[in-house]
Image (cartoon, rainbow, N blue to C red; front, side, top):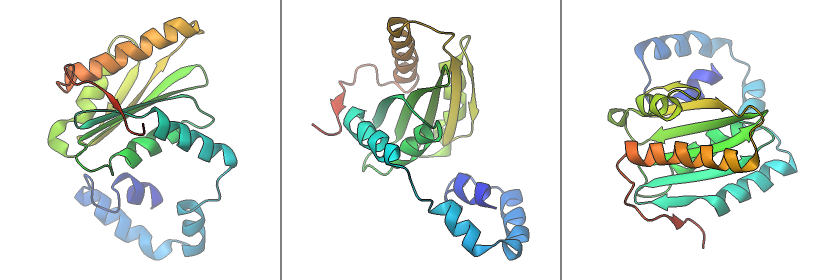
Length: 179
């Protein structure tokens, strides 16, 4: 129930008829108190440090926000920040990446299905990792195989460049979200 609710942003993002049917079937069976604990969990202090770092690291390229979170304690933070940055006025794309458990995780969001975030995410990970998704929401993982810090940075730059090229923003000068 919660998975459908969150993945479709309460049916504002790419919900199917099957999603609606299953949601309505499950609704009478949910435990509202348990759902509230899932939707509004108590958060550890590190969450707010990572959130702050994401705000400080976010760079805007025209209508795209790109953010390297670095090393994260939970890869869910990467997707959460990609969703969060979609709230910025005028933004059509968000791309967040971070390292967890010797892998580079990334999340890509788009403002509408026709932008085909899933297809673009596959291009980002082509020949180096795994990716997939839908029109507005996608993600992937790339093994880091104990790369040196320098090679990790080069890999992040490569994937970010692939994104900028795929969305035609290579000419956009990046500016920090928070100066």
